[in-house]
Each structure stands twice: as C-alpha cells, then as structure tokens.
Length: 370
Ligand code: ARG
Image (cartoon, rainbow, N blue to C red; front, side):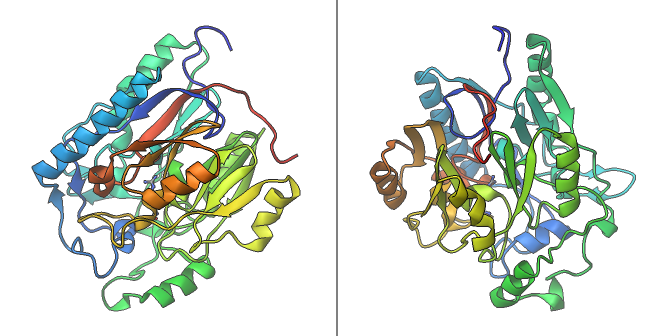
C-alpha cells in the first residue's frame, strides 16, 4: 500500500484506522412498499405509520452516534460522517414512486468495502434508492485523495413490481411466524430474481471469501453478479433458517478474529454450510443472549443487535453498553471490551456494526479457507 492509500479493508477484524459513522438527521419511517412491508412485524406499532421520526429521538440517537465517533477518534481512528439530505421528500424514477426516503444511519447497509473498492449496493427498498447520495461527498473526496480508490456502484435495480412477489405476507396474506419460517426454509422471500438486488450488510467479508446471506434484501442473482464483479473472490451463499426476517448478516453471524465467529443461537448456520469453517479450524460459538426482552420503540431490528459489534482489532471490540451478557462473553473469549452507549440509535436501522462502514483496516487479502 502506498502512503496515499485511503481506502482498503478486506475483513471485519483487522486493525481499524478509518471508518464512517452514520447520522440520524431527518430520518423517516418510510411509507408502505412491498419490501419494507414484509420487514415490519405484524404486531409492530410501525404498521401503517410513516413520516419523520420524532425530533427528540433523532437528537438522542445523534448524541450517541457523535459520542461513538469521538470515542473512535480518541483511539486514533479517523472518522468521517455522511451528509444527510432531507429524507422527507417524495422520490420517483421512471419505474416507481414513493412518498419519503429512509435516512443515513446505517452506512453498513449501503457501502461494501472490498480492498480498495467501495461499492454502493443495489438495495431492494425503494425508500433507500437514493441513500447513497449522503455518502457521495465522501466518495468524491476519497476519489481525489487516493489514486487507487475504486468508486463503484452496483447496477441500479429498477424495482418495478416485478421485483417483488405480489401480496407477499401482506393484508389477508399476513403470515404467522411459523409460516414465515417455512418460507425462509424454502428460501422464498418477498424479492424475486428478475434483477440483482442486495444490501451491503448481507455480506460478511473474510479476505478472499465473501459470505452472503440470501434473504429479504439480497437475492441469488445479486450473488451471481458479485461473483463476476469480484472474480478473485469466492462468493458463498449462506442462509439462517431460524430467522423469520432474514435481513443483514451482522446480528446473526459475526467474525471476531481469524478463527473465531459468534453465531446467533436462534439462527444457527446449517451443518452443511459450517463445514468450510470446521475444515479450516474455525470455531463457531453461540452468541450470548441479549440483555433486553424487547427492541426499543419504532425499531425494525430484533433484540439481537446485542451481537452487532464493531471489532477494532483482533483483541478489541466495541459492544453496546447495556448488553451485559454479550460483554461478558466477549471478555471470556479474550477480547478487551469497550462499552458504547448506542441503544437510542437502534430504531434508526441498527447497532454498533450497522452504524459504521469500513474505509481502512490494516492487513491484506488473506485466504482463510484454502
Ligand atoms: N436483521 C437483524 C435483526 O433484527 C438486524 C440487522 C441490522 N443490521 C444492519 N446492518 N442494519 O436481528
């Protein structure tokens, strides 16, 4: 790597030097649309409501996100922040219209860093179609600072009605959790295969291998696209049949250091898919139980944001400060734990890992699964 290198990251555990931390400004609960409706649990207070989130919740989330950014800076990590736009605007393309956007809290969902490339994802939510704009100033800046930076955008999906199964789990087709689990086991999701669609947070980067969760937000066509886009990588489809709402891998299967991952005990990786880890002497440990019985109000995610941690290096990890069981487990696994208060930001789209996106980690592209 030359001195000018700004962007480089091959995994989620090598020493972190530069990261993006999201912001909650102007975040909205998006209006009804096929992919989003399937994600909002039937009993959620969010069913049917949309619009800007209450200002006091935005301020509380921002305070914690700012605090997290300061903490990272105090450890010598460069932190950049997105430029929020007014998300409470209707948007339209030749193929769809929607009445509001989402926000720029979880950059992890949008930006996939692979080596010296940052790839904006082909997201399946219409309300998130223009979210990449919040990162555009940073991408442009890295492009100018770093002669090797590959500023990439996956093919923009059209997101016509063809991209979604009609009435999937909606209205009179509402599903119980058991019915959902059956669909998940059959790998039948709200999204179809007419075009590549993926969220960056469905991809777990481990050097030469990319493990990609097949679920509500990422389809098989996207995996085929990724394999052709990253010809020197191996793209593996993974799925977790215990998760009724499979979206984003980082509250399900999380690497802590070479040779060690934690796996959500309610969403175990199937035996068949574990083989590659076992064969290469990786240990997969059940994650500790969440400290909370329920997610905070107006939250899309489950209580399993408990395991959504940011690894700073092979021995140091940031865990949400109220997640006492997860902190204790990390400690037992030999990690130094940095507690970070972030629960007020959960409702905006995720936890400690989601609210960040890698720009630079030390290390090179290793082959952990030869
Ligand atoms: N699907 C996860 C859960 O509810 C939440 C994942 C959030 N991750 C993210 N990158 N936004 O358990």
